[in-house]
Length: 607
Ligand SMILES: [Zn+2]
Image 1 (cartoon, helix red, strand yellow):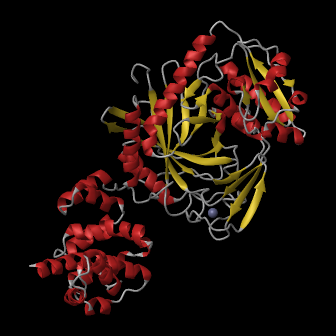
Image 2: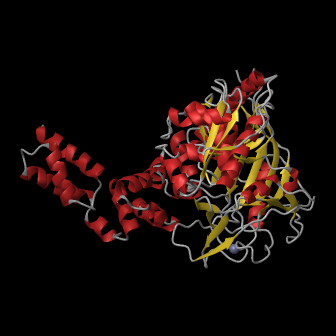
Image 3: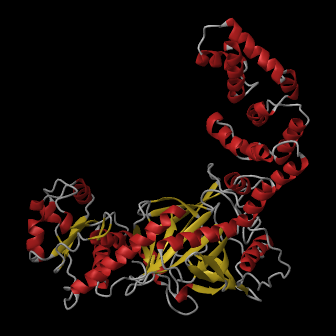
């Protein structure tokens, strides 16, 4: 089915790097605590060196927003606030991007020029993002064939958005300037599953590098999709990998539906744009949105779309109609909350009787649709013009645009596809000559297979060890303590920590490599018993670690304590005994140990 529709799909991945920022020495630390200062900016669109004003910049200016930036004195500096030129490029980040390029057999540029890419949504204090093309070409293999790499770039991350209202966008500076490796593939992907496989593979290769950040939000995936007769549409911000196939599928559906509408409209023409003020006629309308608007001296404006009855309500994606598509444009271009269209009325408190005069005023026939908007006059006009413009584009098929993925895998209009006017050289940073001696890391999938085989770990456990980022420590300990089962060491470094975090509300991240070395050495020397390992780890996290206590409570003594409890309560059921033992031995032995000892003693007692 995807082949028949002529799906062409590419994937783009952004991976954050660890360490310092790309053009200053601030740490790549993301913060949630109270910010120390705020600076404010307004951004104007200006002609770039080519003389063209960027569409995206002009569109954003129309919305006339104030941009506020929250910063920290100790982890952000004058580079992030754009009060000081960028420093030389971060050599570690450069090295990591070169390693990645080599893994993909991409052709590294002999000289690298940092560029400025216009960004008008305020997500960068300077109004542009610095980006450097590192390499072109190369490929990855998938089960459905080769996917070529288009380019690999090193760029700075944008500010994180804190909140947005009609007049103001608030950003935080902590994320701004974090190095990102950006990789984009050619549109060689021909099925939604292959898109997922490609994204997974690139993610695995990126995580093979020691310089990348790990954890939630450190990697972001975008996809671009087109079908035969359609247009390349970029969808940003897939929520997680699993969403990718559906995201691709639903964009194919949207493009297919838009192409059907184009067919349907063939030979017809869109009526002239005429905006009519209906404010007086809505005075009795019970809709809260309408009443609030009129109270603030806003207007209810309307326009007709000839022949669009039924069409505006047409579903392009699940719960996403042509009307939603119109609304998306109006929201972004005019900053309105949304629009009303005739196919959805009655709704939002607007009754059919409220629209009688609208139909009359617009001379609507049965086959015509109308659009209403409730806001101030200027925004209202811009909103309806945006809807009109989008309606006109239906005759062309699928408009070229950037969209934002939603949690249900549908997408919303974000901005037009940026043109070539968007890039120009960053003259504050000198040309970069990439270093030549690049050593490559062991790839994750290779490492998982090797560790699994060498230490007799199942694939799942080997994967956990490698993904935990403690594989080197694991190998060191497993080699050193041959008397301890490798699988047990692996469990200490992975599964037990997960359990501690989940069940005991402690943060195992405070444990250092030396903590593990120390604990394992006690275990190897019989100073502690493996059955109480969970408790030992918890004690260590809480700062209650005391070797004396574990020594004084050898398993024999624990056994005696449990035995005494059993003898004292000959008729108590297992559950009650367990409770008593747990209480008596709290912090000295794990539930697992107590339970197995208890069972042993009970079994003996019954013989
Ligand atoms: Zn800085």
